[in-house]
Image (cartoon, rainbow, N blue to C red; front, side, top):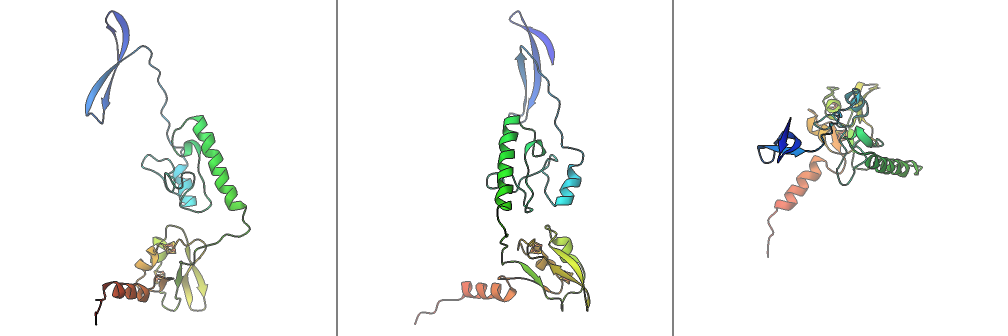
Length: 199
Ligand code: SF4
Ligand code: SF4
């Protein structure tokens, strides 16, 4: 930045890199207004860990889907708005807060929550308590419980999203994703690859 003259008029010349053009640009300004950088709050990553919610590359919270679920996270019942999301103007913050409150009220207005039937289930007989499934699950849906045969993994069907990550990790195939068992998948593959016989 430098104070200079353009056609006899005093101007402030600002030189900036343009990442798209790959060149440096010189801008002559009458007034230069500087703004402080906005950075995520110091406790953001702690909150993300507590609620199992995601952060973007810049450290702000990241919505579940930019168009389909812009005010909520992948974790159920957790919503976002304002500068926790990214730096934004007050009107956009207020509009987003209305949206988040509306989504929360939609959830609270029901007496019961309907969960998917396509969830995982542990066959405790085959579980060797290795914990691989618990580490793999992003939704905190599996925990160890004490049983007469020792510590065994158990899935909370309300929290389970049915993504099948845990059963891919289980060394003993003790976890089964309902409606997507090995037998069902193999049958589908067989049916899809079966040659049609014309008589
Ligand atoms: S990965 Fe399989 S064997 Fe290991 S704790 Fe989970 S259910 Fe049990
Ligand atoms: S299917 Fe996905 S969400 Fe459900 S328990 Fe397994 S890893 Fe967790």
